[in-house]
Every structure is written in C-alpha cells, then in structure tokens.
Length: 156
Image (cartoon, rainbow, N blue to C red):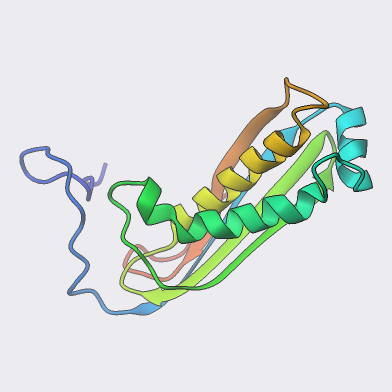
C-alpha cells in the first residue's frame, strides 16, 4: 500500500505541498445514481415537478459544488477550473448523474468531480422528496481521471 499523502511522518493531517509540481492538463469524471420508484422517475422526467426542472437545477448545483470543493473538503486545494459539466439522465430505476471537470494545474480534479456528482444527487433528492422519501443515493464513484504524476485511471 502506498503512503497516504495527506499525513505527515507523525501521522498528522496536512495539506500536500504542490508548489513544485508542474501545471498539466487534468480531467476527472465521476458519477452517481439516485434510485427511485417508477412513479417518481416519471415525475422527474415529465418536467412537472412543483420545484421546476429538476434536471437543470441539479446540473447547476453540481457545477456550483465543484467550484466550492476546497471550502468543503479540508485538504483540497482551491483550483481554477477550466470546465465543469454535469449531466442528469433517466436510467432504469432512477437518475444517473455524470460530472466532468477539467483544469490545468499542479493537482487533480477528482474531488471536484466527486463533489459535483454528490451534490447533484443530493439536489435531485431535495427536488423530488415530496414525491418519495425513501430514494437512495448510491454508486458515487470516480469513473476516470487523466493527468498528473499518478497517471491515468479508468474504473473497471
């Protein structure tokens, strides 16, 4: 197992020093899923929700969340993001969220993509909870990442 970068030699939490790392193009894609009943899915896709277009609101929330990741996760660096794209799509049993984040910088954007997908799922839940309270947010994960010292990653 490799050494955890956010712990120093004494085991104390620290922010990684990226000042000596070169700025390179980096991209990460994350996804999540909101499982729901067929009736709730039909309501979500109809655009007839009491709170408006649930897809558009969740996509915007995901973009905003990616930009605030460093405010939410203590050891994340504030990054100048060059692209954030969040898409919600109907799927069998619920709604799929996909978040794609890009930057050119000294550290990756995996956490920004994961935050975007998570907050978009939470927003979908908020928008649809009047119709169903037992929806389940699941399968939030990193799908892929490119760039950086760690190299490329693609989930199986």
